[in-house]
Amino acid sequence: MTEETPGFDEKPDVPSGATPDDAEPKAAPEEGAAPAGDATAQIAGLTAQLDQSRKALDERTADLQRLQAEFQNYRRRVERDRITVKEIAIANLLTELLPTLDDIGRAREHGELVGGFKGVAESLETVAAKMGLQQFGKEGEPFDPTIHEALMHSYAPDVTETTCVAILQPGYRIGERTIRPARVAVAEPQPGAQTVKDESEAGDEKDNGPEEG
Image 1 (cartoon, rainbow, N blue to C red):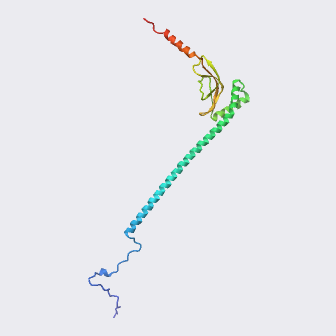
Image 2: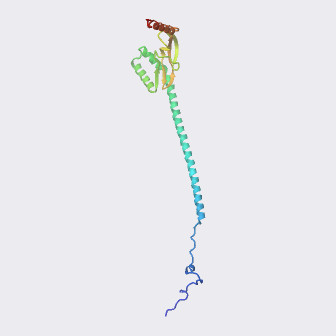
Image 3: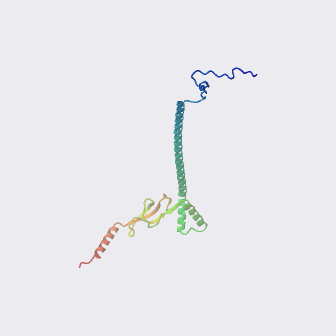
């Protein structure tokens, strides 16, 4: 006959009027669970941090854009200064060569540009042209004080305005920059010539007018 071990089949005492579920122990709340109020506060804190991060990012982006604009302006300014310095250096060099070019021009006019001297002279003119040097000044063109320098003055009956009648020394420019004006002899209309011409034209019109019937 098997002996029963006392206490294994015994049930806990249940108070009168209570259900059996009340006798079972309740599970303890999980560790780390935060109340609803704490979760809302955490979300608000994270949102504020996100806003601050976005604000800082916007500020850094604006700083970067400003630095990029300043750098682009600096590059343009450096490039502009580099071109200006180069143009000044070329202009100074070509200015020193102008007397030699004048000698070449005079030798050509007198038929002395021959032999090896002709080849050297033409090579020098070609190089100067490649560097942007342009010669100007022609007989018969109107006098322009911005590009011409009048060294001689006279009157002529066959001109209607101040005109360059002789080029004593050609002018030179680089692009739009004049490095030496053309030195010229100018002629103006003779005093009273225009008045005589106007009176002559008026008389011709009168003589050629319609005859009265």
